[in-house]
Amino acid sequence: DAGVIQSPRHEVTEMGQEVTLRCKPISGHNSLFWYRQTMMRGLELLIYFNNNVPIDDSGMPEDRFSAKMPNASFSTLKIQPSEPRDSAVYFCASSTLGRAGGYTFGSGTRLTVV
Amino acid sequence: GEDVEQSLFLSVREGDSSVINCTYTDSSSTYLYWYKQEPGAGLQLLTYIFSNMDMKQDQRLTVLLNKKDKHLSLRIADTQTGDSAIYFCAESIDKIIFGKGTRLHILP
Image (cartoon, chains in turn yellow, brown):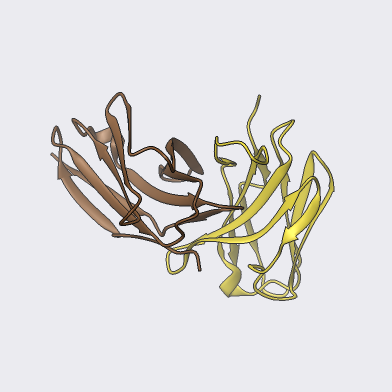
């Protein structure tokens, strides 16, 4: 298995632009998580899905952020409009609901908003 | 509420043992985890322990769990330069909650 695949690896965009981050979870995993990592706040859970259904989006910072999971093999995190304070590394992770093995993380997308 | 605390930095001489400590708040945590993050990479699961265990050993790694004090530790024996990374403690109930990570620095 190729693991959790995120794209792009790096994104530089101008303030006000729309940004879309993509994630392909591990086949067979039924839970998907979006995290944001910054030096100041560490690793923050933004939203997670079980069986493609959003379960908890309380970590989504503002209405500018939205996430979708149209099917079991794809999810997007969109920021519109983007702001410089959104600059961070965004990680996607997947797991099998109820199993002990923890989450498998992707390599992340480093977002820079200028 | 759920919260996981760990110190931010640890420096250890090569060849010595590293001990990274963590406290958590939710006594109903089912599993507790240690993840490792190398520069430019995602988090990688190192090991985990079920809440009814008090110790788990895996090669150079030893995890100790004190459920009464809600204290978890990770001991790395014979620390090598390749162990230099950020180590995250995490607890799991319905979702995994991570600490802010301990940056392990290896001194020559």
